Length: 611
Image (cartoon, rainbow, N blue to C red):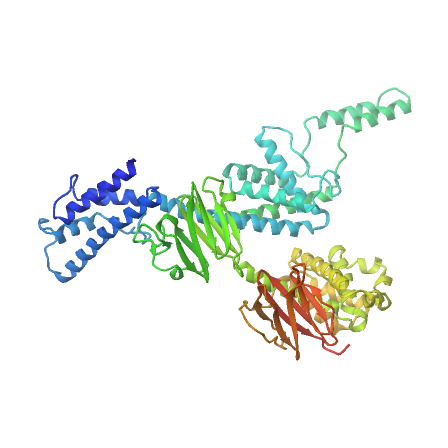
């Protein structure tokens, strides 16, 4: 028999004394104190179930006390405790009272720490995602200046941790030792930044390193003055010109060439911008100190104050915190969640998805992403407490995907010898190099005659080409936050002699793809959804069985082929494979097909004029 089991037995015995009208050993206050201790204790499931049975008896007595108090409002508050009602009244008096300044009662230490830890884990996961996305934006910068500044700050922060006195200078734009264009290198670098932001010591070093780069982009080496004196002395040596030249070259090989002074201001601006962005990310960081847990916020909580009566009654419908030992299953957001303890780990089932979560792993490794169709759920664990977060970004991703498909459809329109596609290619160059490229750029490859190759390309090849160009355009527009995009687009259109109406349509499509504006409805199990003709989307959920959409008097079917790949089949056109975005050209319109998880959505972009 372990100590916790003995304490549960003691709680049971003390409560029995109260039920019999006797004062338990240690006084009536000892019952409430023992209960609070047990409610936050790390009990195994069997012992916790027994505690819950005893606690139900205790709470039933409290309810009886309250009913008695309502029935006898004039009872003297300080009379001797000669009855069960008065005993319970004294017990209620020692329960934790609401905080005068927060309106929330303090809870057991374990529950409060778990609540704080779960929300801290969610913030850290969001921080890693935000930095990965920002890294991609910085990767589109010409010369990767922001990434070079950040790389230098990380290196100098690491040197500071090793007490290395010499600081690294910002490398040049074409330094061969850097691979900032590589996706894997970028990912590792941004994860390193995320790790630094969640560590107070590491962030202090990184912040100091960024400030140092901002104040002194090109730090002097300790022996730089000595090297300069040696060079001046070599100039006055009484030796042959050839020997003097060899001596100077030998000295210069150890002396770094001076950097362009104009680069100093750009580096300082980039360092300040990076520092401001990281400060903004940290501004939303939750506190690490345990705090009060809101009332009615934890499903199966052992505390009556924080217990959530129904999983659908949470204040935030996209988050659910569960005290795992208090139950075994629940239904939430249309999903059936079940869990059980296996050894020291927790096994979670969401519909047909299974995950094993290990409480002793680091916080970043305790975060699990599950995909019970059609949802995406992030799972966080802290001790015996689990938090489910329904990812709302799936809806946002689907909307942005619809904007990308709309842009691709405009680019694939063959009107005026693929004018929109030719214009988008030139605009990408202008966004990268400025409008001066219009004077230096050879426009022969963008004339109407150059569009013959697009007419001869297959639908799959043209789609792949247009998608790559669309993604490049969108990333560059986002990197500039849309500044001067319209002016650059109109300048490129004028250089090519493109109809202003086509330029306007491309500008609108770029706006939708870069910053959103299309809303895709959620998927449902539907037999034959109709695709609207006004540009909106129709959505459905797809399983093993095919799904058909009614489109312009015909049915487009999505079904799996012999390889298990999802194919879009439109009568009169070759079947095409659907990954996430597909655009099918028809004589007077484009059909947009999107997929995310089990959801498929179909919309159209009607051509302004027949082709």
